[in-house]
Image (cartoon, rainbow, N blue to C red):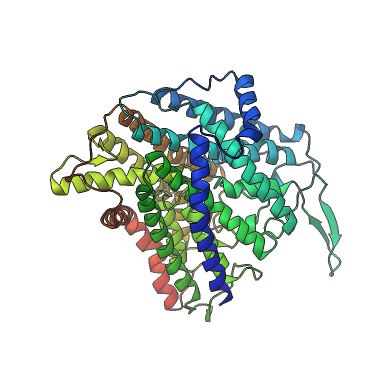
Length: 561
């Protein structure tokens, strides 16, 4: 009963707060007066003055894309250099050595692409300086980049006969100053109040009851934890991520971090509605997301509470924190994979096969069930284009969305955006299963071993960052393969999305008639859900059948790997 109450409070909080945050963010990004403009308006202007940005100058889609790519490239180079030069930089009280080039490549690509996959343990690998100046900064700006691309697509859909999509530099500045930074400060203070560490002190040494010496890692964790959750980044300050008591010490901190993971992606749905001046369009998308989220959660909870014939228990606590329990672990696993956060408070490798399947499906669908900050919205709009196109074929009418015709160019870019991460997941997994360096890192054989590899590349291509954790990826092979997968998974979608935005912005807006296919009713919501599931099912059913599905039936027969 206690766990059911916690789940209900979480869902009600999400439904109540998302529209409020969405309205606030719409005011911010539309340049209207809002609560924090008198407080931080001077800082926004100072950033423009120092950077030489003309906030009134707008960009076409090519210039906007160039800004996204150059900014991301600069962030990648800076973070890479910080890691390989770590031993010579300050705030390295534990004398940690330089990071190897291939791990530095993987980590820099990971945090630049908002993936935050970690092939290392933070407290043993990275100094305070790299954690703050490298990782925490990227947690802000990579999330802001996703929001900026989303805003460009919105403008492409709402404007008519224009080349301009806004200003990338203005969009990321406002995202950081008015949205991410204030929320991160509030959440940081709340987490510190719950016991999350925030200090520059050296690691402490303690003596255990058995007389052994134990090193207790410390650091400025709370500030990074706050933005890692709010920005759907997910990278933990400590290796155990949010299962570590210094990152997530209490049930209330667990609730706050869970809500932080999903609140901005959910709020942006309603920001979309305000831009469209159509609350019904936002509600249709929100209902689609909440249905898919709830369906995955229901399957996972049923699977975890069902009898496990291998362990001979129901509601297995293997790999879960006793202070949080089964429900909070399952809710976190579904939330973190539905939102591209990737943070964890339990060992996903220990989840039941069907729970692991739900997590993989969430990522394989393209992180569109709320998804990443900004990226979830432009991801589901891609599926909306595909749904409208298929509906148009069925009724023999030129497909339209929000009064604009969806033509061959938009559909080609849509297919590219859908196929890019799919190719990474299936092709890279196939390579890893076929070569020695890929197989040598497995800790399990059989279908579970396949699931470990499949999960890893799904996480990379979906820019999620969570892991089954039974796969050793800190090797040259996996660091390079997964880093490349993150790159394709991020920009293989962003570039087509911005190309679509530029194309749509040049079009006229047609009048709504009785023959217009509505995209804000239950019929459309149902059709959108079906298209999402069919595309995901047709693409990934074979590898899923060989991995978690086979493992589920074997587990029921008492066989494990």
